[in-house]
Image 1 (cartoon, helix red, strand yellow):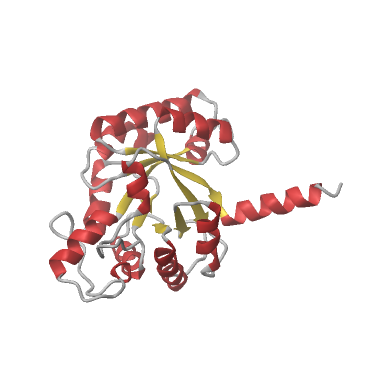
Image 2: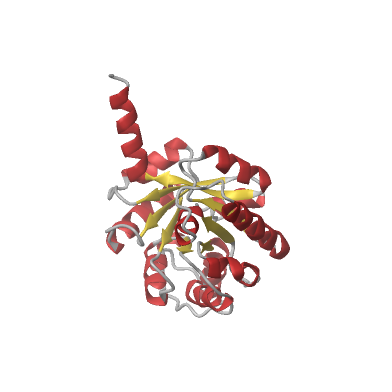
Length: 262
């Protein structure tokens, strides 16, 4: 992810800037660097470590993140909530993206930006040498500028409160992607599994409108069982797509292989 000029680049940001779709694989199960190679070989642009719904350790996240950086796969991390200390630690370990679940206000979004970005954009402290810049000794001002530019923030919209504030969340400088969490939105509205429901369609429409208004990117999530709907929302403008977790992909492939013998 270091280009020929020695500058840090984020392939997710690069693809979105070119109007292309960036595809993500969630990591919940695999604890070896092989998962980064598998993702690269399968054509994924990013992997994101799910610290909200897994027992992955910070050490594991750091080791795979460094491997992913060298393979050109952007390492993102979903943290359990707005936690500045955890955000700092996963970024210092090598991540170039933070995904925050269930943001409900512009204040929440600003708190994330403050934790993720170095001054003057935010309040994150500078650790010195960083894995993203290959542990080279780089002037502090250049480190701040390069990592601020490469590091992305994904705000998950997965509650009615978040939907009500989606325009305000999208207006916060530093937020890059608004990822609609269809599974949780269905659950909180008592329509579990009904991804065709008007509530979900309206959630995507309203989030897309907020993204277009404020120059942000629509993310598509929670629709792994419905590739038809994924394609629909990509056609409408989704440019960051979560395609499922290593655990679910393995389980699905294993079940399919077993059925082939019946």
